[in-house]
Image (cartoon, rainbow over all chains, first blue to last red; front, side, top):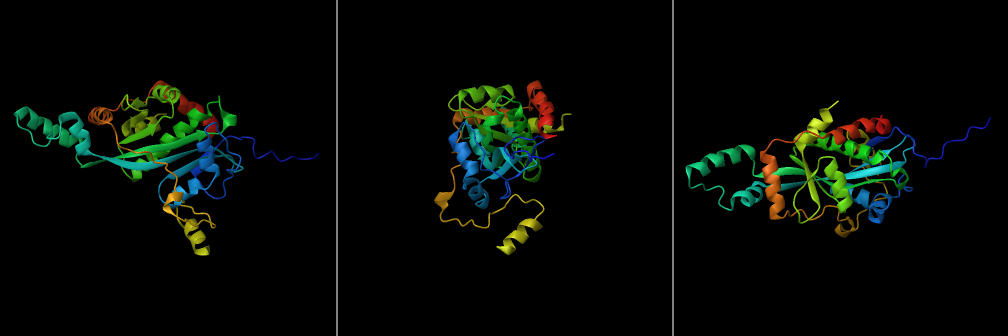
Length: 200
Length: 74
């Protein structure tokens, strides 16, 4: 009897999600979006890691073959930007007693001058796995990593940019909300992510 | 390079792993992975309101995805 080693390009769950390393086999990764394929198969992902521009997580099988990946970044929004959009530029200078009470509420909701956030830069699964539950599974793993990261460096919200309207609908179905009608940027509050991770 | 390898192995969280043959030539080599983060006024308003309110619980579709993910990720 001759034992034939399984071809490393055959997906063999269970997968694990871990930080991108040189030992991972990225060469065969392919998805419909060319830029997403190039990012992980070429040097850009390592350059972003080396520059501290992104944290790149890959989904690999036991043969270390990459079947999906996502990148996480951090950014911040100032409290002033947020509250000026709601109450105008003079939100910190109340003139009426009602505004003074409101200011107290605002300071409790935003105790620091900067609101930290996490950005999902890229997320992609191998073309072979299209039509399966793999993509949704990868998203859930991404949320787990986002929550892990938020416990190390505080973050109040996860933001992503959906590539097209179809993806807006997809992410909306999973509970992401659109930030505005002007673009496809969406968000999920970190407390929702926490509840998701802690759910059985 | 041996020092770099030793450092990578010594760190408990090996997120920062640089290939031995990597040398960055210029800042321009870095991909523009982070899009411009300037939010429009409407986006800021939406976010401010959301941050002041209670976070919604994860929906049933998301929780179902978590259960399905166990088949793929163990």
